[in-house]
Image (cartoon, rainbow, N blue to C red):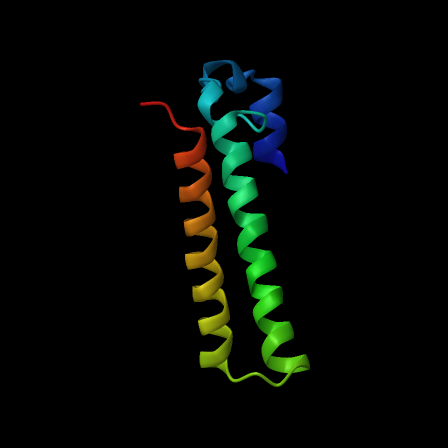
Length: 86
């Protein structure tokens, strides 16, 4: 507590460089990292639901997510091919 009070009263905070805009909370980079974290939590909850509630074995859950990844890749590939330019 004393160190924090000295940090403020001695104005040591003025000598610290501000965080780069790339690492600010509202930057594209941090928003993307947040979205990836939310996706990973969704996948974790989905895995738990498949294995605990539906009784699917762990390898079956991995297979479901693997097939979903392949299917999504195929759909994105078809969409990018359909709207791509030559």
